[in-house]
Image (spheres, rainbow, N blue to C red):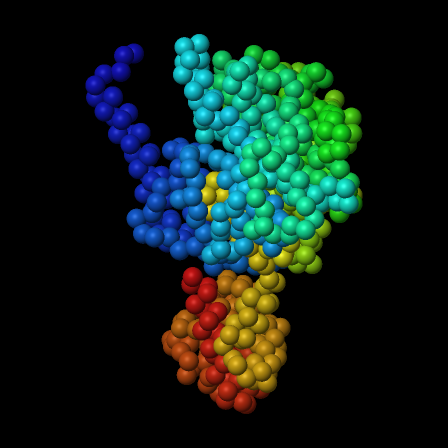
Length: 565
């Protein structure tokens, strides 16, 4: 039936209503910091390709919660330093600085949110301008091009008794043959240079040690060159080997005429190793789609994470000579929800023939980089930390006996492109919104009690006595908002109605009291619970020191403020 004009109006209004719901819903939830805030940010990103600014300025969260730690951050936005649109880049540590390689090829020295400097290091030309010029030729004007995905992918400082230097990886365009490939260039660094401030490099100072084979032509399906599927991450294993994740650039039989990850004559869709001394390269593993993280653990096991399609983001332990299945086997589907065309009916939703992943994320979280944590906190040390794009989160991964014991999601609220631990223990995040986020972590007891008391009470003796008293209170009372299991939470007391929490064993005296837990009422109750509320189950806390009493009430006030925030 042909759609008449009234139906067109109804359809248009319906579409507008859906869009308005998400935009206004995101604003309201962002304004009031409701739990669905992250969901609406993701909906906006998927629908419109960006996260819209709120009508009011958003406050950055004070912390991010892990099961074991509370993570504190400082952030800085460096988008004004980026020369062109795009996403990508990498982080590495050299001396006291973290080096940030941006997608447009800048190398910045990062020491803190307030100390980000340009360096005198210029990387080799990746042929970006030549690529743009070639796309204007008549034979390529009918192809689709996404210049945002043409990028530098990673930077790595390596050091052993035999080799010391910087390596960068990038998509490299050949302006003569009109083809592209993954390339690694290295810059030797003398042992007497210990700071990037002392380092000067020009494009001609770098040595190209690897170019992937063959050089790929433009595709006539989807985008002609898909740099977002390049992989490009690196890991060093002494004395002289760089391990490299070489993506398939979407040459998978779906977005290209043929699939090349299973072809032995092609180095794409492979994990490679390159010897710095001989510059010889060798295929380590086959059947890889888009490896975005590669790292050695404390036992020298090599781990990667790779993007799947719709589902099938994988964590794999890489072993020499193993085939990991892509695109013949995958735990994902096409974005159309149809099976991957290269797979068989027996393999659909299975991994029966080739090496199955150690872990897979269903649905996909859009994995990014992977790093080993060491010296951050004993509860995390030896674990892997992975960034993600779609879920805007970190994933804290513990591996035991070659299996994932847990994968803990920590929502950050930014598309995390790269996660790196600096030599000083801090965790640094690089986001697609061009933010650098610096993370430190502390156990919850340190956060809620010790840190506050150190700031609030200068007298060490009084501070210790207050700490001892509050530790006694915590034998029954929680300090987390909403936890009223053994007794009312201390975070829900100050200025609240007396007897108003969900705690089930209030005495009749407290149930019937119509008052408020003011400062005076709290002091009276803590001084003599039975006199204030006859029949209460609250024992006498034995607080006879007026100074301790005052600080305990101050602390409950602080708990209450944090629970409202």
